[in-house]
Length: 293
Image 1 (cartoon, helix red, strand yellow):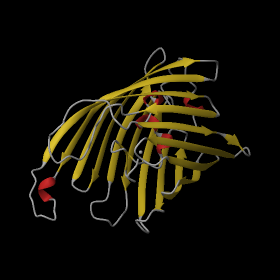
Image 2 (cartoon, one colour):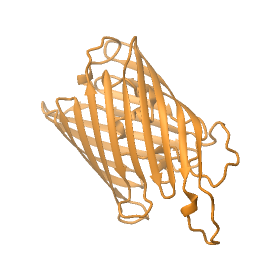
Image 3 (cartoon, one colour):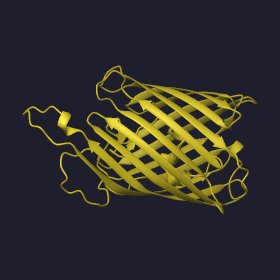
Image 4 (cartoon, one colour):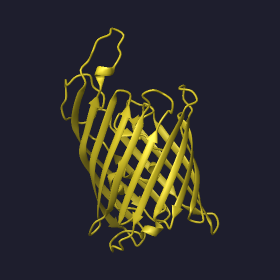
């Protein structure tokens, strides 16, 4: 999720609706929502700019057995001459601290594939570079505490160096990242009336060589069906969010982001579909109908 404005340290693409699919940044989230959760997301950033980032994500996760959650995700990210695809598997284990308080630990593992179309690049000295392709392995980890009214997570989704843009194959080796991205997330649920719920949340991202990133989100859920919200990313963007929820099993969401940086008046559009399937599994999890995040 950052930061040049498009990626978390060139590793995880930026989303606005991440709070509803935190599997991409925290493997401990696998299995938290329902017995099987399927999510699709498409994001077009800085519309009208040549080579602007475009991101597509497919992910699924669910509850397996004895507190074990499993997840799988494919993320494609294209910006300029560079295209990358991340394929990851997530495994979590959930401990019931009490009847309603759960603590999960998770591990992430997979591969990052990059393709840099350098042959189409234009350089000041008119040099021509050969296009290159390659891949890197990845591992990550996280923890996630949650109940019906509150959640908090801490994760490092990429422990290894996975640079996405290269001009040669030098130093193409597996090693710990020099600048890991640390993510802290939290959110609460308040019932304002019988029909209106207020869901504030936040995410803090720290990477040693990048500015500290802080998100503030305020969402209002009406009658369990319509959700409206705003999101502010400190010194970066202001976003509006709209979602339609059908029977608590289908969520269709749209966001419009307006950049606040020196890039000028640029807009970004994001569409997400989430499907929660309740297979009525028993185990140390909350009922999927009580998961509002």
